[in-house]
Image (tube, rainbow, N blue to C red):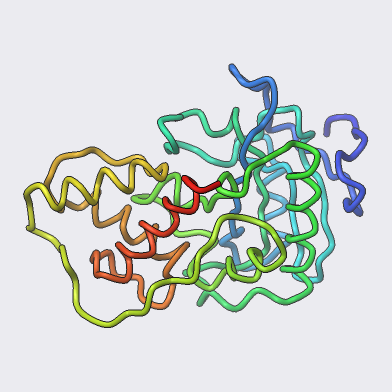
Amino acid sequence: MTDAFAPDSPLVARVLPSLNFGERRGHARPDCVVLHYTGMPTAEGALALLVDPAAEVSAHYFVWESGEIAQLVAEDKRAWHAGIGQWGGLRDLNSASIGIEIVNPGHDGGLPDFPQAQIDATIALLRDIAARRAIRPERVLAHSDLAPARKRDPGERFPWDALALAGVGHWVEPAPIVDGPLYGPGREGPPVRALQALLALYGYGIELTGVYDAPTRAVVAAFQRHFRPARVDGEADASTVATLRALIDGLARG
């Protein structure tokens, strides 16, 4: 076990140091936050993994269901939480981000609701980090945003709308679901390429192929999981496209 360090946030109840970190590469400071669920049956098992050197995985913060917060890695270090992914053209997200693991068994465990105390604590932590690090709202991300083909966390039951009401993250009210898909598997042509371009403009790692292929479907599903969680099917209906456009318009106005 490495030596303890002073917590970066006053909200931290315990420092539980992990050896799984390194130096940030090419980033003087983190400029985004990535939210995860632990995806394991118990909090104890997840925590043991995050501090086990053999696992080669970690995060900066760990939030229990009770709302208690532990810090595992100092913010100025590169924790190993994001893995292979992309956002806004950046591929080394570990060097650019702060990772927060939120205790929840995830999809494999039935994706239960996140307790209110846990959400309140996560909001408070995010507000503290954003204030200290000048992190923009649109840089509070889901793990699934970075790696749509691999990850689903923190999942469609994570209350991004509640975070937005508390001033955390980028959010618009999702457009109503009123019809079937505009584009789906097998479609191709300029409209599909335009959709891919909008997703890339917002930050998603997607190639502008003009074909509604499996990677495009995965990115659309990741977008829905974060911003239009009422239906996560990977098919770009009018609600999905309108919500995406509203988010981009909000960035332009900001």
